[in-house]
Length: 379
Image (cartoon, rainbow, N blue to C red; front, side, top):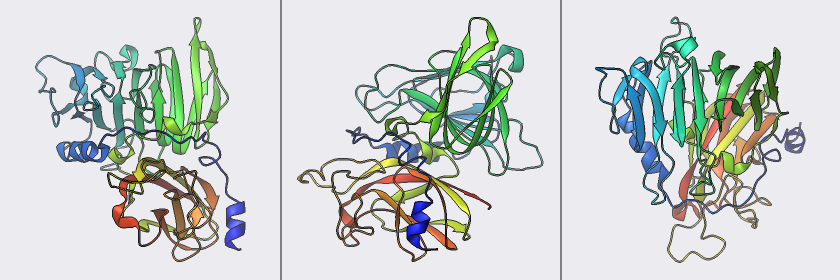
């Protein structure tokens, strides 16, 4: 099978499926913020929550441990409610809390946790019927997230990013709705009577009025509960995510992410694939092809994984596609366009490599990092 046939089999879930647009990105050093959170939360264990980044308000149980500054870690069952704050107008605050919880994963799987990142304008309240007066195991909770105008176009106002361990599904009840998650999802909700579930990678199912509905990668589904309760809930048909909804979500805080520095050229993902396998790639983050004060247009801007959409690079790793777009290849085979990602069937065996598309001699003056999630399924 030729490379051209490989590309013809590409299912454009996240490339054509996502509505893309060139954005003006926030001049915020998110890499430093995320690196500091990882350092501060190094000792985070199972069924614990870490105060990742200012600003967070938390209500805790009497005599609980301190949870007032970055790096503070307490058991989740000492947490009654939590609110993280949106990116401030001064661009120096962005509330982030990091959870590691067992949920309903068997104790026979040591070290296998669900990772939850609450960020931006987000509030989490306990489900009193399921968990009692604290957030307990985070198996069930109520969520609200901001719906205002974000400080920056590429920063979601708020949300929860949730990743389950590989090879197992986790059952959750969020805002009263039943979810089965075996993947990475983004959750938002303007009110506790509704929920929007977006599949970043893997598989997600929601149950509405007894009907199970799957949400494909790169799409979202909105559920709303009418006045009559869960029995009168309705769900929209899945629709494509917009690029702005995932451009800067904190994927680098999840355990199963792959950094793609824009300064490095081809980066081995360490993911081994076999000819005939189906693979899903999801990419977020921003990068720039010029890191100087006097960069000419259009190279004086930060770009999404779609790259500089008004350019085509004649001497880049892959010609005929935008400069700085994320591209991939299997070992030394011909490159293919990845962008925000998608699902496709590989026609050769080997290691998956990813890169920001640039000329081999031009990486020194690039800046930024993309982040990828890769899922490989058997035939």
